[in-house]
Length: 497
Image (cartoon, rainbow, N blue to C red; front, side):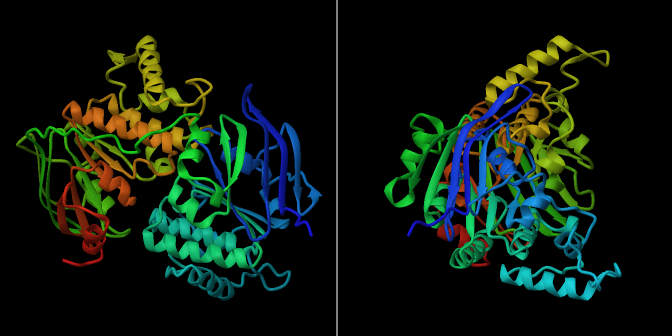
């Protein structure tokens, strides 16, 4: 007996402003299957899924859901047909509560009275979150939660719709190892119920663990589909990038210079008595579980958390950093974890975002030189291989990985002494990751001191010269490159000595 696909997409094409982003792409998903959808940033993965869910219209092609041809007008119509999507860029409304976000647009009421069943919605919110093993107060304002917690709310929301097809776009990008294991348990449960899942991820180890087939896109074209048990990582990467990638982490040829940054007794609401130093040409990795205080420490260092105490020295001289302006003046750049809310102005163009931190260098007497600006932006686009139709394209229409390249690139124009990178490769494909690692190497060769926070332990181990492990707001341990391994880091991160 032939099993009918839950979803079948045939010959899908799409263009934006004359730029073709999808060219006759095919995809199918079967009941109880986790299908990986992979490709470099800008390959068209998210666009294809937005077409499936009615967010974008297609120019050509056919879409069948449970054997019936469909053409969804919007995301609500696709939800009613059993298709749910968890976006890479979270759709959380920060000033609403967790419960209000969970039931937004589908509130429970007493009959047709319009009176909300607040108690019932609160209880169901707790039940959905408990399925994921997450303990979050339904009345908590969503904007107060970490990115990882917000991601779990989005996942719980999709599960709550009883969808038959769930699209997960980089669902583990902001999750801890523990939260990721919980999500995988939920995915196995959904598979057993016959739910079909499209799993978009750049993390190959996850794909080969939970997916049965892999569909590969490159430059908007369908390259092929492979069964997981009949392929390997090398073949999938070759299909994605059109070439062999080689070793993921470039060789670190560190020549440590003088002490560039020294932090003494840094204390705040979520961290206490933090001491560390970073040297010229060094990458200091910061590891720890989500909620340990890693991001809060570097935000304080950058002046984004004014209520803290401690002493900061740059090149042996004490500096007072009370605001991000002070930090930038002192030579500190900061790539934040949440690019959408904190790293970019989404309604502005590629050009405007690249130049936000570099206006002084491209201006004369407070007047921007158009020639200098365009030359600088084009050099950044070329250096970071940003896929954009032009430098005037709005940043919000770029893929997540291309947005991340702009977030990093805009800081390089200030020639920072110290560069803080908080989850620098979150939501970035394997090819772009390697490019970012190579840029990090180039910066350290120029004497830049880098502080890198990452939840991916292979990344921490592969790129760091020393590793600072944070546990519950305190320094748990410091390892050098040679002695560090995943077991030691996790032991320290969970409170072991």
